[in-house]
Image 1 (cartoon, helix red, strand yellow):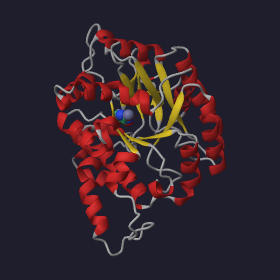
Image 2 (cartoon, helix red, strand yellow):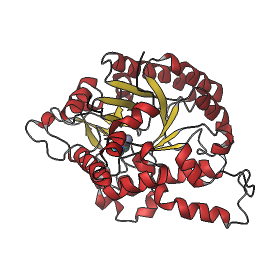
Image 3 (cartoon, protein in one colour):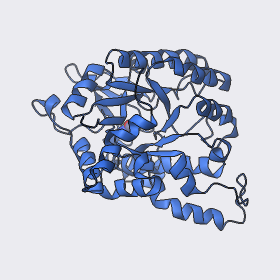
Length: 370
Ligand code: URA
Ligand code: ZN
């Protein structure tokens, strides 16, 4: 039997979530524009800043963002057997404390129902009500295993508001570890726009997406490592978006800085039993292969092992620019680039390529139902 292809990085906004975005006038929101033109999705910090002309427009939002049948069509066009769908950014981060619990349940139920409507094709990462009190978050985590297709949760880098090294997150990490739910850690907030300089807006979304996103993820997971999250929760599993940002490349420097810093006071800082960055990369971290180059896939496989790297597409973001005829059947450059990168990275070693394309996801995320 041919081995299966699994996409672990693919997003959806359930219709009730889009309805909420349509009622809002602050980021994140959906704005109806000229009749006959698609609505626009404005989600990134600063995207509606009138001084940043080129990014002020957000992006067009069509049914590929919320209609699950479009996802299935996309999968069929690109030879993808199974997708692990997740709510797209900014998830539930912007909700008031009182709204978060109800919407988390609704969104998680809706995404699980989408999976149910396409048995064998879809699994899911749920979303957490991170603005609610921590008991509410933990309660939702313990409810998730009752949803047949949910295998983990997607979240951003802000945690409860103070980042992922916040000790207040320990009950959340503990519950996730206990329920064997993988965290899909995904960027959204980027870097302060000042780092991109006064001409940053001239370059559209290139600087925030190509550099801001991966660096945000790198910093967030590094803070988790430094604060001892993986020492306290040694079975916690974290899938890093975009091949871990720059973590595979910088892991050696990070480890060296820890070993040479007299003032580093993370837990067990100077104790022999402190878990090294390399050990964490090979035990707790999974890396997606959404990095668009052979070099990036090789770095990910070297850092965490080829048995811990997983194919992804980032659909429906990064569609082809031109709205060509027969668009639905057209293969997306963003997807073919990642397929090629995996093929080139492993060359004649077809087994490793097949593992990255699907076998690893099926094993690590338990993508079977019985
Ligand atoms: N990819 C995402 O997942 N989110 C964005 O906002 C942009 C690209
Ligand atoms: Zn994504």
